Image (cartoon, rainbow, N blue to C red; front, side, top):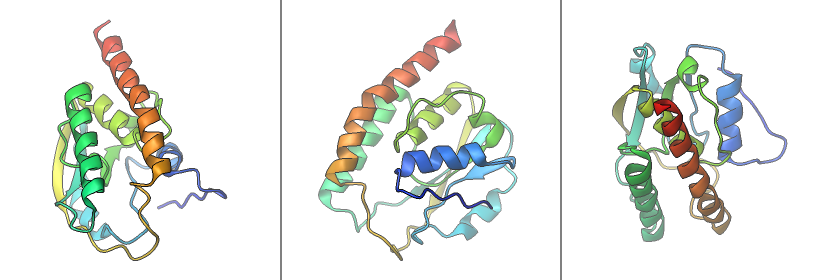
Length: 174
């Protein structure tokens, strides 16, 4: 395990990019530090097959507002229709093969980086293993996923995500 700190909060996208880039072991994961994910859930998946990744998913979150639930549904729909991602929860914990995710460039710097990585892995024929995860009450901090700043960033980054996946898909057929 390696801890990477930013002196200033740069957002989840930069935290994921820096963490994945700094990783040196075969498998990489990012786990939220607010206690909502129990790291013991990772143990059965320490040895995942090459050309595959694990995508944990949460049951419907009763703590989410109707607005936050609707935002999640829109994100899931956009990922499915435009990026071919049929994951139950693209924004929850994943276990990736480091070699697989560093084989292609990342274009995004927001939370959409998870969508970009998953789309590119699926386009390169990686198999996804979806695993139900328990969603524990937050032990620290507050959710920022439905804040106006995060929503604005997501709206600005969505066209970039669609373009990045489209360009990658085209490069694979060229």
